Length: 182
Image 1 (cartoon, helix red, strand yellow):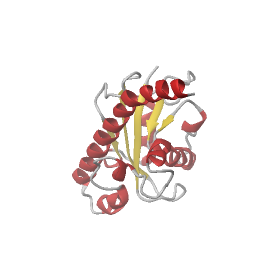
Image 2 (cartoon, rainbow, N blue to C red):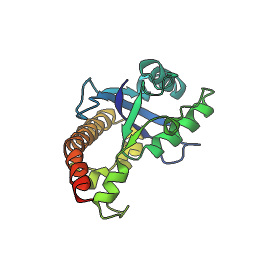
Image 3 (cartoon, rainbow, N blue to C red):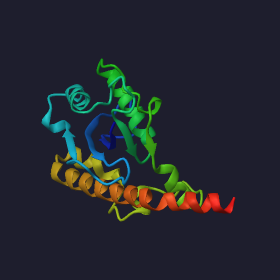
Image 4 (cartoon, helix red, strand yellow):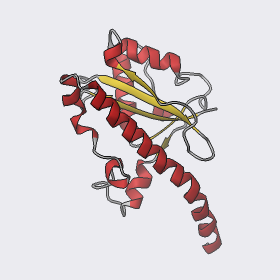
């Protein structure tokens, strides 16, 4: 059973026309949310095609294991990853990856609640110390500024994991407080 930070970067926002250019994941401790393994960054520029990138991700992860708890994605706004994985697998003639039909943990809802229920201003870049949002990734990819993309990914993963492990530590005390007040 494994919980895994999961994120992707893409050439745009349309899963029918834009490609997945990176898939990044690392195992997180089930009880603390802290990083257990090395951050794996699969990069389209190291593959012959997007299809090969996705196939390698499937091979290196247990995302399509029949046991639904082999790869539990933890991320921020996993609906984005879901749409891209599902559509880009279909486009590339692969069995679709359906990450929202198995166990998953999406911390975006927590970010919205922490932002007083507002979606605007609840991005990971405004909730954490993440330096920027990913809007510049397509331009960096076109300009072949791959190291800048990797630096962005590393910063994003570090800040997500810091946020997740803080939640793992703090939220159990809220449950105790809630039960004592009810």
